[in-house]
Amino acid sequence: MGASLRVAESNPDDGAFFLPEQVPMAGIETAGRLCRLEDIPDGGAAAVEVDSASGGFSLILLRDGEAVRAFHNECPHAGRRLDWAPGKFLLKDRVLVCAAHGAAFDAGSGACLGGPCRGQGLVALPVRVEDGEVRLR
Image (cartoon, rainbow, N blue to C red; front, side, top):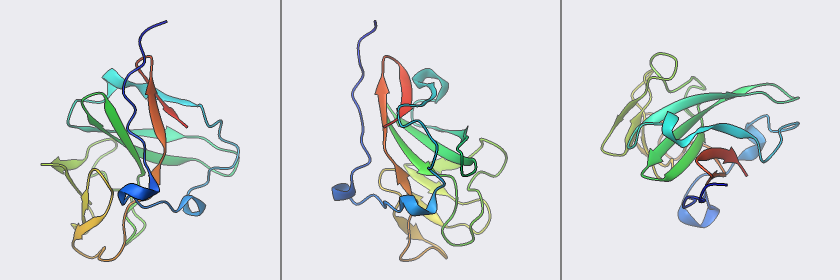
């Protein structure tokens, strides 16, 4: 068994938006493997599709070293996916930009930084990195 990596938790006390009722989580195994850490470029993003009994959804996984944050891949402004092509995101200097209308989000907290998403944010989901794998908590 390999060494466990540092875990970056999505924590309601750190300013991340937690609105799990907006994500179809029913029927998901909370320890479900999403991908390997190495599948996400350091400083970059990846999309993963999650199946659940109540419907599937897409997650954005953002990597910073050995830490990963996860957000529902949906802009709160228009309800559209944030990627401009499947799994391709506009991400620079820790700012994630929605390809549809230019809403800008902080990659650490999911908070809206500008654009039509004012007062809203991305829905964070808790993940952990364990033995080189990114998993839902």
